[in-house]
Image (cartoon, one colour):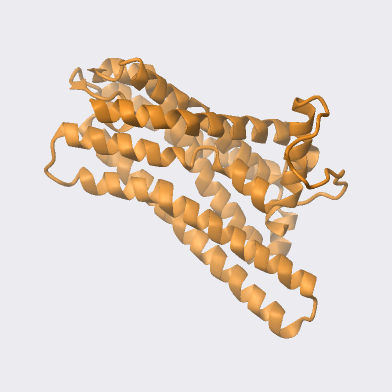
Length: 304
């Protein structure tokens, strides 16, 4: 299928950028203790879970896209597992942001370890259940390409797609609520406080949340919703395969985007990322104009 090769070729640069971003994000979280808070750990978990994306494009380029469903599922079930883990982590990241914005004082008193353990446990149980169900109901039908939506049997794919749409929609709703809470807080600050720096900081928070919401809506939510609708329509398997390939390309825009959004919008992360880049280049000058400084105070990304 020519469209698959075409999509795979364009996947490669996105995969390289995403891999670079995720590796830097994981390393920075491990390296710097002030990035090891709830929010940062969830972002790192998402980055780790996304590391399997490159496999899909490589298999398509090597013409290994067409195979029996049972063989396909055996070859990518680990990717399916990590994809589902990432979905759950994204949901908990949205919940974490909501708590931080809605109840800042309560958020500061919450313990990090139980929250992370809960997120990982639910992700583990959900992903394990889907993977086991996939092995139980898999058949020997020939599919092309070998990718997650076609690797699942039709009934399992319908159930999985419903949960994926539900998670994506819940994340979207939480992001919308966060945005309006930040916007209202900014308006209140503008009316009753004369601190221009605080207002500028609040405005930056609102804009950052808007960017996050737009990125989520234009990638994961849109792809999940389109796939859900397509599977309800009387279309051929080849059509579904072509649409799935396009949606995989769309999802890759979301692959590693946390790194670039944080680099752009968050000073605490940016200084750490620049320090990592400087170390990678053996203390040579990197192509940025911002001076790298040592951050001694613990920051959380949503406070920047």
